[in-house]
Image 1 (spheres, helix red, strand yellow):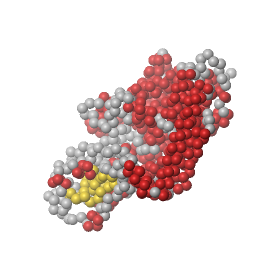
Image 2 (cartoon, one colour):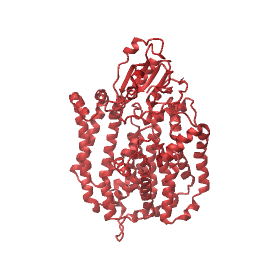
Image 3 (cartoon, one colour):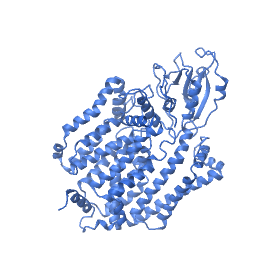
Image 4 (cartoon, one colour):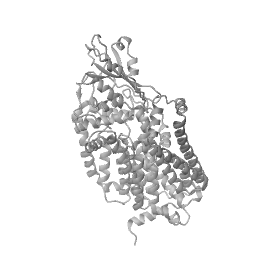
Length: 639
C-alpha cells in the first residue's frame, strides 16, 4: 500500500499528461537528470550555486547606492547604542520600514566585530540562498523532484532575485518569509503538513520586515484560492485564533512599542506615508517611482531575465499538451496573478515589489519545462530556436567580455572613448576598472571563455530542454561571479563616497559639522557620526558643511560667498554629475570662524573623481532645528 506522499506525487505526475492520452513513464527523462534532482544531490548543488551567486566578494566593495547606506546607518545606530525598538536613522530621522533585517544585520555585526559592508549585506545573501533551497523542498512536496530542481535554478538566477540577494535592503528578507507563508498555506490546504503555526510566524516576520503587506498578500491569495475551490471548511482547520495571537504578539507588539516611543512622527512616517499614501497617493505623497499601469508587467519580463526566453516554450506546452488544472496549479496561478494585479494598483511602482511572486512564477515555468522534458515533441521547434537564441546571447556576452579585456590591456584610450560614447563619463572609471581587472587576470579570462563555450554548444548541437536550462543557469553563475568580482567593485570604488568622507573627517576633526539642507547616507555611514541637518537660513551655521554641489550652486551669490570649498568629491553618477562638497565658512564672514584654515587643508582639497550607479539623490527637507552633534563611541571599521 502506498504512503499518502507517494499517492500525491503520483497524482502530480499523471496531472501533467494531456486529457485523453495514456500516461507516459516519468522516467522518460534522462536517468542522470532524475538522479541529480533527488534531494541528496539537489540541495547541495543549489547550495554551491547560492554561494557562488550571492557570497563571492560580498563585502569586497564599498556601499555606493542610495538604498544600502540608508539601511546600514540604522544598523550602525542599533549596534552603537541608538536603541533596538526605534533607532534613529543616521541619528536624525525615523526609519521608513520595520527593523527585522536591521536586527539580523546588527547580530551579524556583533559577531563580526563591527558594522561593515559584509555584515549589512549578509542577511539578504543568506536568505536568498535559503529561499532557493526552500523553494526546492516545497515544490518537491507539491509536484515532483525535477520540477523542484528546475524551479529553484530559475529562481536563483533571475536578474531581480540576484540584485535583491546581494544588497543591504529589506526586499529579500520580506521575500523569504512571504515565500514560506505562501507555500505553507497550500501544504496545509492539501494535507501535506500538520504544521499550523509556521504560517503565522512567517507572516509576523514578513510584517516585521516591511509592514502590513506581509499579511495582506498571503491572506489575499489564500482567500481567492479558497473561494475558487469552494474550500471554506478549510478555515476551521487553520487555527486562525491561535495564529492571530502569534501575529499580534510578534508583529503587533513591536508596532505598539514603536508607536509609544516614536509617537505621532512614527505614525505619520511608517503607517501613513509608507503604507496608506504609498498605495493611494494624495497631495502629501512625494514619491519618485510613479509609473503607468502596465509598468509592472514590463518590470516582470525584465526582472525574470534570462528565463523570460523560456516563456514561449511554457506557452506552447500549455497550449498543445495542457496539464490538468488541479488545485495546486490553480494556487500557483492565483499567487502570480494576485500579486501582479495588486502591485498595478498603487501609484508607486518598482519592479522589486514583485519579488515575492518569483518563487511562484519560477514554479509555473518549471512545471511546463518539466513537461517538455518528459514530452518533448509539442515544443521541439520552440526549444530548438530557444537554444540558438540563448547560445547567441552567450556568445555576445562572453565575446564582449573578451573584447573589453583585450581593449583594456592594448587600447585603454579607445576603451575610455567607447565608455564616453555610452554616457559613462566618470573620469576615474576606466582606470579603476583596469586596476580591478589586473587583480583577477585568470578569473577574468576563464569566465568569458566558459560562457563562449556554452554558447557554441547551444548553437552547434541540438540540446534538449533540460540541457538548455542547465546551460543558461551555468552561464548566469559565470556572469554573476565576473560581475561581482570585477564590474561591481570597479563601479563601487568609482562611485562610493567612502574616500571623500575619510578625507573630510580628517580635515574637520572635532569641529562643528552639518549637512546643508539634506542628509547623505553614504557620508553618515562612513563618517560614523551623527551630523545635524541645517538650513541655509540658519544664522548660526557650524564651521563646516557637507552639501550637494547642485544645492550649493542654487544658493544666492551672497550665500555662496560665505563659504569656501575645501574639497570636492567624486561625481556620484556614472555620467559624471552629482558631486558632494565639504564647505567651510570664510574667515571674516559675519558668522564665520575666527581663524583661517590651514593651507595644507586647502592644498589637500584635490577632487577625487568618482560617480554613482543609481539616479540622482533628491534633497531631503531641512530640519527645523539641528540636533546636538555627537561623535560615535567606537572608531570606524575598516573594510
